Length: 235
Length: 262
Length: 119
Image (cartoon, rainbow over all chains, first blue to last red; front, side):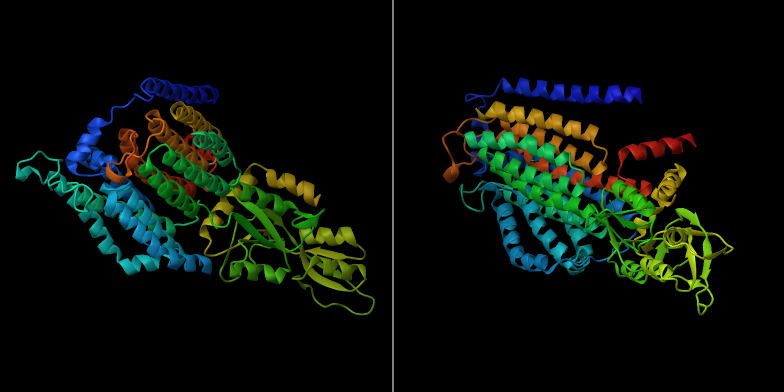
């Protein structure tokens, strides 16, 4: 007990100190002449995309993004496993929400879905992309599930189909990443041509990647929400 | 640039306020505000992608997931009948042995205790309906009704048959008492005949208040006070069971009994 | 200039989050403090490369003469979503713990596991 009293605050101070050191070291390079952004701009122009951040995560560093999607999948799998296994599929008691939630869900849902889909699709042209757009659309789905009940939404969208689409999106992502190989290019580079910058169909493979990642994030988040709604109030 | 500095300066105080709250739901809401502010900071720092993502995830999804996991109302609603010593009103608040016990349960669950006093026959109905989470107020284990479960006995008691012959006639054979204590005490003070079965706490209250000419015989058998929970609230029942056993083991219940019941 | 202010705020938030994890007993609040630590790391990364009067990293119509560095934003973008999923998983573990020990008080769970080990 005494050692815990000393060790834990010491470890916390050491962590904070390490963070400070890293930040200090990083600050050396900060300032107006700090980062040379031109390589990223060049790669974005080569890809035909306007959003430089999208061209980085889905162009140059697509491998990192794919592994992060894998981490996301494993986390969602963990949530499903640990919440379903002990309890089975027993339905929780439905707690009725007030009318206000239902009415506002009816008004807001189309708006949210449209905005989320727009952000996903136009990820290569304006800020956003698969991650943001998937999260936004998931918010809409969550609003409906809170208003109507997770079971009804799950029944309407047919859980089995959702699972198949989820794993299908992951498989499609991997296939898309490895697809350049039979065409003679290196894997994880883009296959589709970079169209005219600013058009919807431009940016190489960024658009398909965004769509697939958006689907993956939406469905994964829906699984999390669904299971949490089933086991609500347990803490 | 000054606006951003203000936002940045606001972040640590909001984080401190959010994290060092007593009620969990307030901590979660504070974190939602924190995420929103952080998203604004990202927007002004020239990172719109990050801002959109942080707003959608931090302020909306993460908050919602926490709110779903945390118990819904944040309150532990107890329906209780008035029994001096166990649950009674005192100086504007409710106090007593069972109140202390339930206060501990609520605190360990991070909930706020709300006690509603009502006539005894309404207590069980309220718990069954779902208006209250727990039924209390000197309820005896074994008085089970359909759809309700009892927590383990937190205080053993005995049943007493109390008679008092009235001036003119007899009240008949003792029957289990199901009314309000204040009515009973009032009728005892007026000298009306009594024939009831009372448990220890109620008996003590009766004796302390009027105490004239009472014939008390102890009934054989073991009885105990217990709380009543609706059958579908299994999680609450488990929590209550664990807490009651813990408090019995470390002797807190006896200390409270000494203080409240004398 | 914004850069060092953001980093200072991030360091302070990191400290607050760590303090929160250590000091608070409630498991849910510990997770919230971890979320604060996450946010502080993200803020630090983004504000290390902030330039004054920098616009969003976009080409074409939305561009400004000075562009914010897109690299830390790229690093951080997917991290936010992944952190949410991992934090949800951590919350599931907390739910399992609560189901077994009927409390979110970490001290009490610690005591009870020590009692169980002693038996």
